[in-house]
Structure formats: structure tokens, C-alpha cells
Image 1: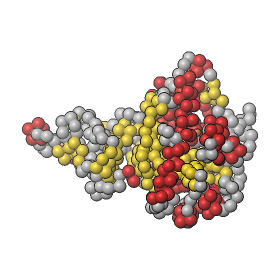
Image 2: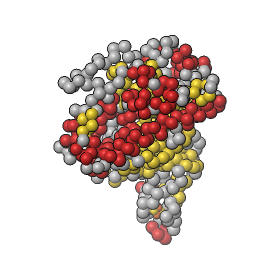
Image 3: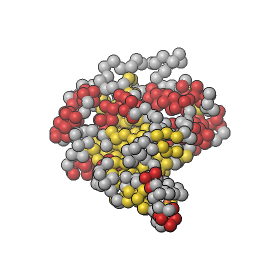
Image 4: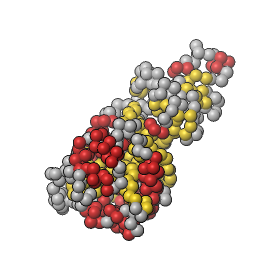
Length: 461
Ligand code: FES
Ligand SMILES: [Fe+2]
């Protein structure tokens, strides 16, 4: 039993109590039951290419330093001094061999080891009384790097990221492994959106239904002709393991010709064909479907599209974003431009331009979406919203059977449907219900996990 049993039962039946998009109690439960248990994205390793590079990233209330230490290894450390709790690193990005706490000056190496304590002997009696090796910055309880993406989990006993991700891994390769060198990211752009974090996450997981209506002006001006309703209807929605997304239909052809039409060069196409999993190559080359937006539960989304950046040039782009909750009614969007590391500078520049025209705070798609999502959140906070049930049942009959069968000729991993439907939003919410139902992890328990020194010390959490 949880305090949210009624909500969970309703959501599982495809009916969303409207207030879930602006509810302080529910947000507190999400913090402990969803965000404290799932794998969360922090940074891409291309953001810290050299020894000493670091970025500081948030997930909910927790601040982390992601650094590349002197041996070249990536470390993720909780950004809180073991003396009296000051944030050790206040800059968002930089390069340093040491972090010196601004409060009293304890100094940590960029692998987290405490190496300097002012007046060590006089104040503490030296090493005999205060073992500095017991006072390293707290490492993330669990960390995994996949395709250069750094994920952490606040639950040291959580299943490994790979098992949580499951079959979605192939789609992750589509977005972030276009060749053996992988991708590099630029940004991130960050902005605050007065909307609940779930709305963006579930939209990117498969809301193809909004595109022809919300983004009508984008297709009218010719920036993205494929935003038209007929095109989206010919696409699919798939869910695979820990994530789901949608695909766009492409014109007849094979893998090289289809990728060529949307702006990839022959060399880039060849590299992709040699690197992508066969499922992805078949999805595009055989089925004529190319992944567009997707979400890995809970709050990391991807998007691949193409835009007309000039009269004669169509260019593809990829973006990745976090829906970083601030409160039940505010989200910080953290949006990266993602590009094939081995692409030439001219392609990277043009692709960046396409991204900026479509997404980011001034992008046309983004502006359309933000207005909808902030408006939903505003009305979801009132009294009437506690009486309203939202319909999340598109694609289901009243007896819960599906209007259309899952596709049998879909080459990508996971189960897919054609046309329109809220299959993915329901799957996304199934994972959300699973976590709310199983409740919070015990943050009081003491668990051993490897420290930055690689030993198994006890850390009070
Ligand atoms: S709080 Fe960091 S040195 Fe005192
Ligand atoms: Fe949109």
C-alpha cells in the first residue's frame, strides 16, 4: 500500500488524474521512489576531454562534480564538503587538479581524495586523529558510462544500467554511435520551464499526435515539411526495455539513399552502416522508418530530425535533453547538441544551425511545445483539476483490446504500433507506477560501495 494507490490504479487503466501534473505530495514521492532509484544522466565524456576537466551537474537536489582525474579516469563525486557541507565546486565548468572548499579551505584532488586541511596539526591533531583517507568526496553510489554518456544511480543496489536499458540499447546507438569515434556534444543550453517534468518526458516518448497540430507553422514555412499529419500517421511508436520512441516514414529507397536524402554524406552513411546494430540499419533501410524522438525512463530524451537551413540545403541534427525537475511545477531543461565526432567542421556547423532553428529556447518546435506544457501545469494545480480525469487511452477499445495489432514487420527492437496511439505514454507511466508502488529506497541504511580509491569503505547515506 502506498499513499498513491488510487492514482496508480487509475493511471494503469489509462486514466490520468489531472492533478498529477502539479501536485507537491506526488512530487515528493517521485523524488524518493523514481529519481532515487533510476539511472540518471549527468554528462557526456566529450564535455571533459582532458585531465582536470570538470562539469558540475544537478539531479533534483543533488549536485555532482563529473571530472576527469589525473589518470584520465572519469569520476562522479557528490559536491558537498565532508567538513561542514559547503559545495566544494561552485563553477559550472573548468579545469583543475584540486578543488578547494570556499568555506574553510579543505582541499580535494580531482579524484575526490582529501589532501589539504588548513592548520591540520593545530586544529585536528594531524593524521593520527583525522584520517584524510576517510574523508574523500562521496562518490556516486553507482556509475556507468555507455557510448560516452555518464549515468549515475543513487541506489547502490540497483540493477545495472544495461539491464534497465534492455533492448533500447540499439536505439541509443542510433543517436550516439554513428561510428567508432562516437559523438561529441555542445552546450548544454539550460532554461527553466514552468511545467511539470513528466510532460516533456512522455511527449518525447511518443506523442506523434501533437505534431501536425502544435507544429503546423513549422511545416507551413517549410522548415520541416515532414511535420505534416499524413507523414506522422505513416510512422510508428515502439517501446523497448527502458525506453520508447517514435519513427518517421521515409521515401522509398535503401539505407544509403534514404540517409542521403536527409543530408548525410556518403562517408557518414558508410560509417553508420558499418557501426549501427543490424536492427537499426534494417529499420531505416528495409522498413523505411527512422527514429525521431525517444525517452529513456525517467527523464532523458533524444531527438533526430532534419531541417531546411537554406533554399538548397537539408541537414540532419541530433539533440539530447534532460527534463530536470525543480518542483512539481518547474523543470530545468538541459539540452545538448549531439554530433558525429568524425564529421567535418562544415557538417557540424550546418547541423548545429538546424538544431538551433528547431530546438533550444529559441527553436520553433521548442517554443510551440513549451506553451502547451506550461499551460497544462498551470491548470493542473487548481481545485477543479482534482476532479478531472484525463484520457490516456488512444489506441485502446473500451474492453482494453487494441484497435490495431502490433506491427509484425518492424525490424527494430521492441513492440511497435503504426498510426497514432498512446501506447508509449502508457508504457512510460507503467514504469512510473512500478517505482511509486515499490516505494523509496532506504536512505538511512549504510551500504558499502567502491570509493574513489577503489576500496570498499562504509559510507553513511
Ligand atoms: S565546509 Fe568545507 S572546509 Fe569547511
Ligand atoms: Fe513537439
